[in-house]
Length: 294
Image 1 (cartoon, rainbow, N blue to C red):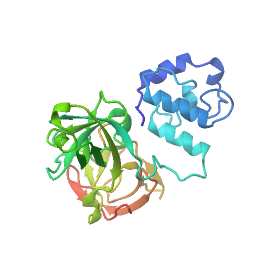
Image 2 (cartoon, rainbow, N blue to C red):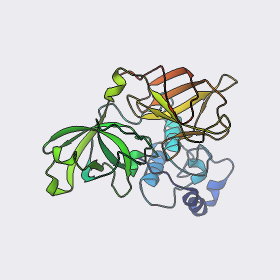
Image 3 (cartoon, rainbow, N blue to C red):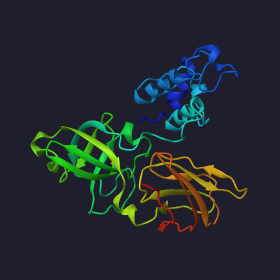
Image 4 (cartoon, one colour):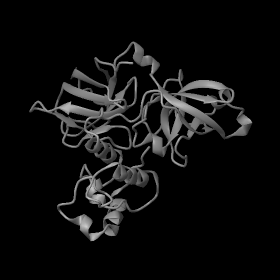
C-alpha cells in the first residue's frame, strides 16, 4: 500500500514546498495548503508513498510522527484525524481481494526479509511487492492465492522489490499449483486469511539477537492476522508504541527493562489484544497468552 521514504526524500520535499507551508501555524495534515486536512491531503500522501516522487506538498505537515520520513504511520494518523469516529488502525476490510501477477523463485524459506527463520516446510511461501509489504506490515501474512489452475495458501516471508502493487513471487514448487510453470508470469488474485496455526496457539515473540534491558527489538509471530501496531506498558502505566523497522521487528531504542512485559497488539483490522507477563528471553522464541479473534 505504501513505500517508506527516507530522510533524503523528505529533505527534497521540504525544499520544494511553498514558503507559506513552512509556517509554524501550518495545520497538521494540510499537505496541499488549503487550510483543511481532508481526504484530498490523504490522497496526496498516498500518491507520494506509492510513487518515486520527491515532493509531497507540505512535507512538514505530513510528517505526523516527526521522525524525518513519510511512511504508512503518517498516513494512518492523517486518516485518524480526518475521521476520528471511524474504527482506528484498519488497513482494509476482511476478505479484501487484491489482484496482480505471480512469478516464481527458489528463496524465502531461509534468509527472507521478514526474518521468520526457521520457516516450516509445511507452508508454501511467497515474496511480496514493496507497496503491499509496507515496511513489514504484511510480514507473516497468510494469503489465499488463486490462479488459472487452482488456489493455494502461502505465507509471506520475503520481499519482491521490483514487483508492482499486487504482485507475488511464489516458491518454485508452489507456482505450478496455480498456473503452468512454462508461463512464468501469470495474473492472480489473493486475499489475507487467518493463519491456521493460530487457531489453537497464542501469539509468540522473538527478541532480536543483541537485545538487552537497554536496547531491544521484538518480533510478533503466530498472529492470526498481520500486525499493525505494537505497544508496551511502561513504568508509568501508559502504553507506548514501538516503531516498526524494515527488518520486521519493533524496536525500543532505550530498551524495555528486564521484563516480564505487557504488550498491546493491534492487527490490520483494528482488533486489539493485551498480553501480560511476557517473559524476556533474548534470542529465543517465547510463547504469549493471547490470540486475535476471527
